[in-house]
Amino acid sequence: MNRKHPAAGLPSPNTALSQLTPFKQGKSEISGVSHPIKLSANESHLGASPHALEAYRAVAATLNRYPDGSQTALRTAIAETFDLSADKIVCGNGSDELLQLLIRAYVRPGDEVVFSRYSFAMAMVHATAQGATLVIAEEPQLRPDTDRLLAAVSPATRMLLLASPNNPVGQYLSSSELWRLYENLPPQVLLVIDGAYADYVTADDFEAGSALVDAGANAVMTRTFSKLYGLAGLRIGWAYAPANIIDSIQRIRTPFNASCAAMAAAEAAVRDIAYSSHVRDYNAHELQRICAAVQRDMRGIDFLPSVANFYLLRFVDGVHTAAGAAAALESAGIIPRPVGAGGPDNCLRITVGLSHENDAVLKVLARHMNS
Ligand SMILES: Cc1ncc(COP(=O)(O)O)c(C=O)c1O
Image 1 (tube, rainbow, N blue to C red):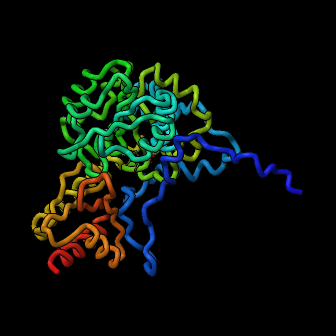
Image 2: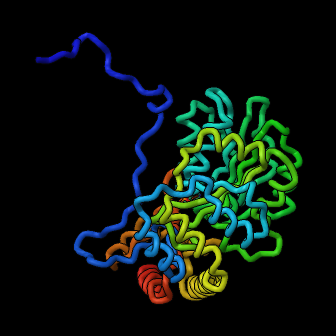
């Protein structure tokens, strides 16, 4: 018997959802290619520290137990490694979850959230779902632009979010500019600095954000184990925030949002400083090598400077296009990331892979550009 009243309406979701489409993960397969070189998701091709893998395996013996909801061991390891206060750290299911929690805690329907143009797209989804109005500050120099960010702030602004380094370019806001941004923000605006790629940066004028957090009550830095630490599959990230903001997150965070396997692996990974330095150096060396090869052999492509684990190539000769280069790479079994609408024109984003994978990219591109 059909118990439903045909006249009754269907459950209706939050109206803000009608503006969203489900997230589509980047391509990871090429038909007919058994082991493509996937350079589309900015994953670490060196993998996680051997200590992290060992810690992950060891957790198998206690999977019947709930994780430590207070996240003490991982918070302590992060605090000791980066010389931070463990009380100001909270971990989550990727930094994505922490950005979502911050938006849920601080943004009300109708509030404005300022996004720097090349910030994390999922954070824009979270703000839209919350009923916020998104205000985009352009990045004409391909890095966050302090004056434009400040000009985008209005009395309705509750949050300002930027990625530094940004994505898909891989450029950062210098320390002095970040401080200028922070010092000129009204105190009711929460500054969220998404540092997903901060671990790769070695520049002297880079500030990841923790100094701003320690200086006041309206800045937060988010970080991830998905990139340099090679733990994207485990979903683990962290936020560094003043006590008032940590308190808000603790009120809405599910108690076991970080799994015991993810926390154990992340704790070992963050303590393995020799391994993380090796990954950072390898990435910097490969980036430099790729840049030199593109500049030497490929007139028609601009290599845009990056400090992250990916680089952006712009096709500028009026003959070759990003789409054409992407097709050439794919036909050689390599998956790059075409930059979609809203990104810089005619560009391909490519993750820094292992040396031989980067060589494969360079070979295909050189052949393509000279064809
Ligand atoms: C700029 C930026 N922020 C945040 C994230 C989220 O990372 P995760 O949720 O894996 O920590 C990503 C992932 O690619 C990113 O590119």
